[in-house]
Each structure stands twice: as structure tokens, then as C-alpha cells.
Amino acid sequence: MVVRAGGAIHTTGVQLRQEPEERLVARIDGRAVTLRQAFHLARTHRTTPAVTQLTEIGSARDRQPPTS
Image (cartoon, rainbow, N blue to C red; front, side):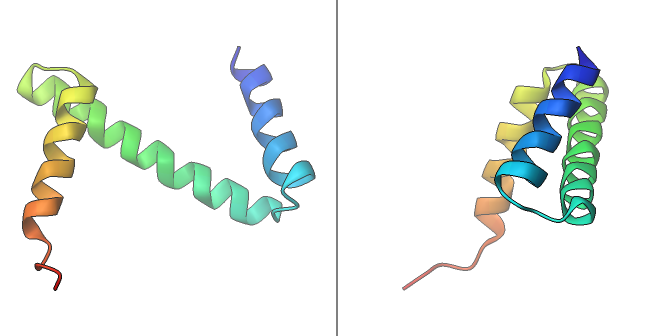
């Protein structure tokens, strides 16, 4: 399953979107870090990754300065 997903990601990013492979890998690495953080927070707070991400999104909005 992982190999097939990797092939689809590579085909979409590099071949269809003509994204440099290095940029694609960096983008995927960033998402992997985010997922690891979400799973860690979920385990720590004994909840689901979806709930932790919704909580983080809400907190990030609260920290942003108001727009005029």
C-alpha cells in the first residue's frame, strides 16, 4: 500500500505538476512532521489526531492578530 501511494504521489507531484523532486520530498517531509506531532498529541491527551488538530487550528486562530 505504501509503495503504491508513493508512486501516486511521485506521479502527481513530479510528472503531472512538474514539481522538482527535491521540493516534493521537502513538502512531504513537512507533512510527516505534522502527522507525527498530531499522533503524539493525541496519545498524550488520550484523544484522536483529528480532535488534536482541530484544537491546534482553533488555538492558532486565537493567536492571530485581528484583521481590519
